[in-house]
Image (cartoon, rainbow, N blue to C red; front, side, top):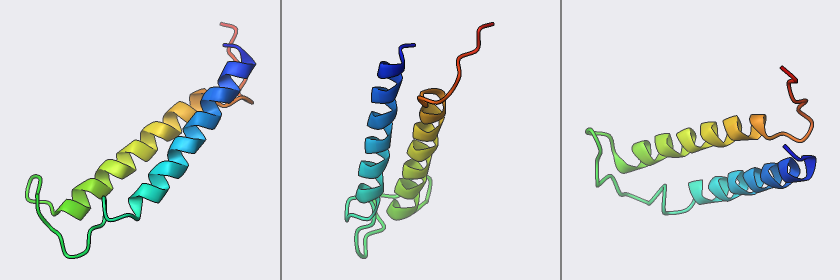
Length: 75
């Protein structure tokens, strides 16, 4: 993959991680005094927090594979 393209993808992933971090602390994920709707008997804040954590894991995985300093395997 082209080094320029990897750099652009990596920077986009960093921007998405920053946006996700900001959204995590808004009332969208952590509303005051709200526990409905529940999912599998988990309160709203807990299951949205798990969803945010999963998104961070996915962003990290893509970031590892698109890091501009990563050397490509020739095999």
